[in-house]
Amino acid sequence: MSITLGGYNDVVKNMQAWAQAVKKNAQNALFDSLDELLLNAQHDCPYKTGHLHDSLTREIDADGMHGQVYTPVIYGLFVEMGTRRMAAQPFLYPNWKREIPLFQERIRAAVLI
Image 1 (cartoon, rainbow, N blue to C red):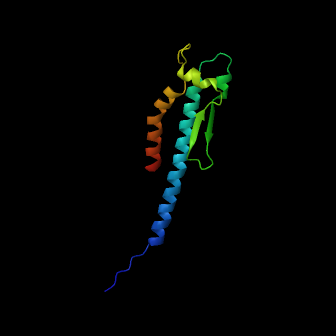
Image 2: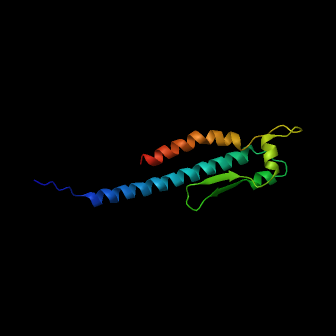
């Protein structure tokens, strides 16, 4: 007696297509979350000369799976965290904290396509 199973190649193709779709949706989730984070940080950023506001930047790595919002302006850290002579005016961290659950939900939706 012998049993033959067919369709293995179809299963592999379907799994590969699903994996590609999940990756693309995860990249979109990252892009959307970083965009939201950037816009909200810019909105909450103290505006004196506009330099700090305008320096906020969103970067996504070539693989589309890693990204960041940051400012290359050195005094951005002092504005965010404060100093002994200046109260903190956080604009990035609070928005990052608010974006985490939204990003997690986007990732869940990306996997459950």
